[in-house]
Image (cartoon, helix red, strand yellow):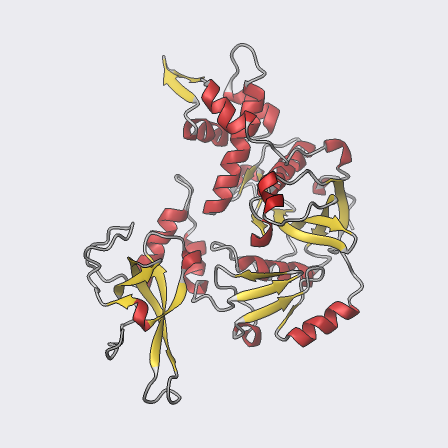
Length: 418
């Protein structure tokens, strides 16, 4: 407002105007913004706020005049119902993590500690990559001299990051590579974009290509990939130890090259102790500029195609992010309905598992989430209504069907040792 501003403490609960309405928030950090003189008279405060009950990607810096001085939070909806208590940073994160975690997922304390240490105020605000400028969502631990920049420039082919536009343009001029490093393992005609995507001005790509990159062979590229990904993923602790992983880069191909739209990673040798050796995906990200085109589900389908080649069940590592879980549920229910609507007579969860390479617990949770399973007489029965079939199968218009005849890939454990 117009009056003198009373400085709020870090960790305080207040309310902040968001879309014109007061919303409960926690003060995560503050900084002075010079007005008349540097840090002297006329200086004002900005606060980095977390909106209680909303995802952390919406955290932002706000001017002091957007803060409503109601530290009790009374009368302000906050989605987490902490009453008038002042929220510490730790408490805030615990609420967020409880909200974000998939129900029933085991929670690794070491990972949580690492997450608490590393989750800080979002440092880099935007990145320019290819023909897009993208707003970031989360903190990422870029080296200090880069972490201080509000904007980074990233080469879409090498993923090298730069501070200055002039350096970036000079790099693009010199760079001859027009695709990710690694081996091309899959190529197909790009599926037609949905009408609403074309109406929004998105171009129809010609082809899709998938490249496999060994973390041991292209270490710097994979490290850059992980730092870029962290800008859009909340729970991610792997940045530099990339050697144990294989990375799968999905690209749209046009006359200018193969443009990365997203990636997933997979352990070369999945841990038997965690996931029973069945984890088939460690991390997944579609870049925000390519989201809502079905690429998340395409990558999930691809991870299961690799599991089938390995003659194994597959499941993603936990915790699954909120957006990741939406893609998985959508993919799982479509694949299950595809079998169920053609099947005559009874079918067991075990049979569904054998035909899809999905773990039985993922199948049961999906059937429950979409109200497709009933429990009576001591056993589960699967019930598909016409409405469910229409909503999640007939109208789904998938563009993530993998043509297994075009996949050129040998399971890692069958490859000759180097």
